Length: 168
Image 1 (cartoon, rainbow, N blue to C red):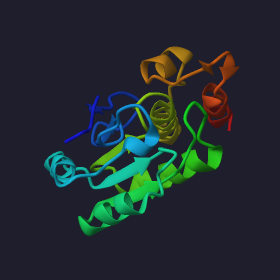
Image 2: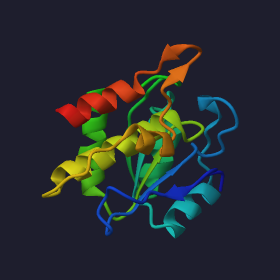
Image 3: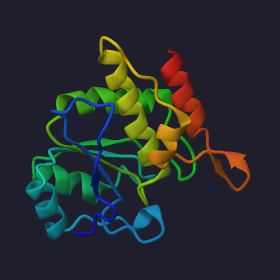
């Protein structure tokens, strides 16, 4: 099906929510590798995925948008360049769309780490804020989500956007 490293997210979200993360479909080593096949759609349906949030830099790919729409799977394209961070507005948009599809949302970027980890962490932070007594996400939580702090000696901005979200 091409969804490498597919995994259900646990912790910091309601037990009734179904949030998953994976690579972009058929990702090899660059964002443009993504390809949504009939087998990929079957995998999404078999796993009851009704919504995809893509942080792939090629998220506005018309073939992917059409294939998901034709199969009644909601799609939130939020293009983000590799080794950078989604914006605060991207995280907010992801949260708003995720709340409409808590029964089955999949987040992907390219490989499944930095950008995906940042969105997953952001959704967890928002979920914590909705609780009566919330737990703050730590850098250890970010690492477990594969949020990338540095790339080629420079900050990716991923930790910073999450710190800003927690403070807000």
